[in-house]
Image 1 (spheres, rainbow, N blue to C red):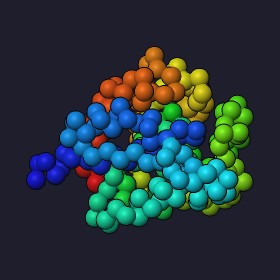
Image 2: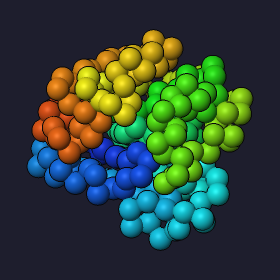
Image 3: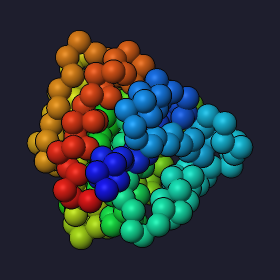
Image 4: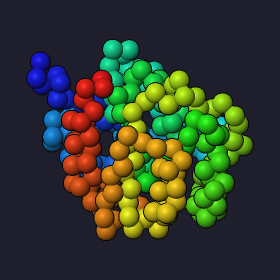
Length: 220
């Protein structure tokens, strides 16, 4: 029974222009610590078979995540982890499957508020949008519609923000602005690290996740 309580399932979702490969160090560390870890490739990303031209909607892009969440038994919960643009992706999963998520962790990620369309964050962060607009679709029009996220679903899931203090892609000031507008239960700052913390400081990131799973274990 003790082993059942301690073992968690971490679902890792990559940001734009990346793939499941970016989590390989963290996946190994989480498994060594005795947990399950699943890194997903979103549409037209990593080894996903779709081409960019096949992904014409945000639903197409997040389909692998949604299919995976649908496959999880109703009596199980996962810790959902999103990096960068994947903050929007995991938010859609939180809206669709709030009962299957014990904790959502936003790592240098877009952090929407259910009171505003998530696409507003992309408009606020124009520099990142310009940087990503060619290699990936941002689905700005779809994500700018009202009612994409609700308090009853998205707002009911425990959320934590992990802030990378030397991030030059998702700058600290912008991260803190999002947290102010959409407060999380906890904010963790990792010093002397840039945007790709899972590659540059995987052990420190793993330690953060392990502490969080212990703290939020009672919310399963």
